[in-house]
View 1: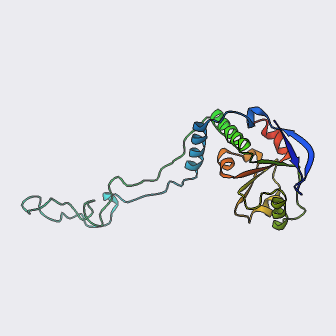
View 2: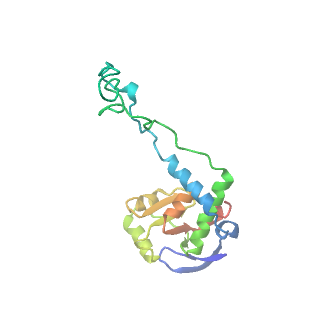
View 3: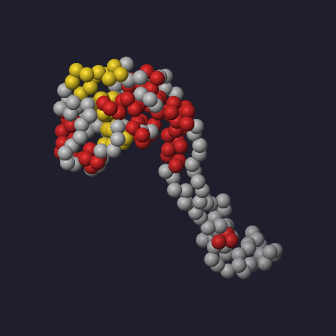
Length: 206
């Protein structure tokens, strides 16, 4: 599959790049996408929620009333879970929410997400560029030239470029990422992908 390459002024350069069908043109697998995104979200969880159980409460351990003959339910100490202010039964404890997803499944999920973007016509390839200095104004001009102003963008770079990253950092709807860090969640979270020309070669090898 061939797509046109644009320059930063939004003009068609006349060049074409090939998007490998094995990466950008597969039949998407929704289940592995679900697993990969679920793992990404789970790995971001701190897992530090904690509540005190009966034995961890501060308070007297004196039995509040006699076992029988009181005319009501039996009670232990004031830390009992049935008492107001008592411990909690089966409350949350610190835990690790992460789980394993196989490499082949993660690779298939990423390819599936990219294939969805191709089907939605949500990929624009731009010839390699950089900024002399970090300028948000120049980055906004780029998005306007590509008719992507106001959309949630993911810019895919072949390698780190501090000037491009800093130019887009203050824009709430724009993320900049390198090919090596590209993942299923980031692809699906963006409304449109802006991919630099030299990034395509690396992505075709996914």
